[in-house]
Image (cartoon, rainbow, N blue to C red; front, side):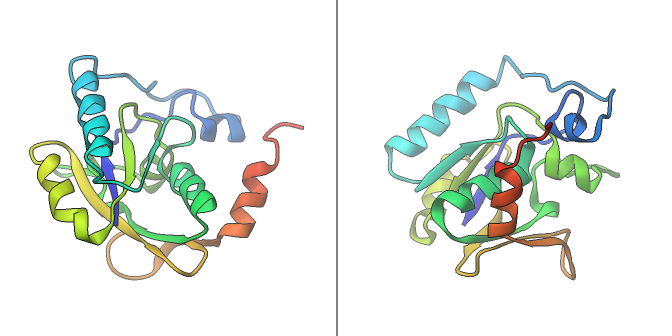
Length: 170
């Protein structure tokens, strides 16, 4: 299972997405200095207690890039649901798909958790912004959904890895 810990906000200002598209403006990612140390300490404890097989931050490129990087290194695919991301919906307001995929909100971490450790991992993060957003797959494809139904996007990992290794600016 793939879990995301931390709030996703509409923070695309100065992001890699903006760099790629020459965009400007938007909210700059801001660290929650009151909560960040506790989240990072809790993440380190989850690793120490053997609750996770892999972990990744979301600082450069956001959720989509971090998931792709994890998949490249593991040689597996990932299917995930944007509606499960903490912060995707706040009351009546929903983040745009691009905001969920590419926001660089700090103090967010992805974890790969074996199914037999999922209950312990969830208990470890009880009361914190943490959610199971997807799972690994044998097929080397990254698939994003927004609730049930057709994927928002589906891309082969070899194609994504080739794009990832290509410089943004030539």
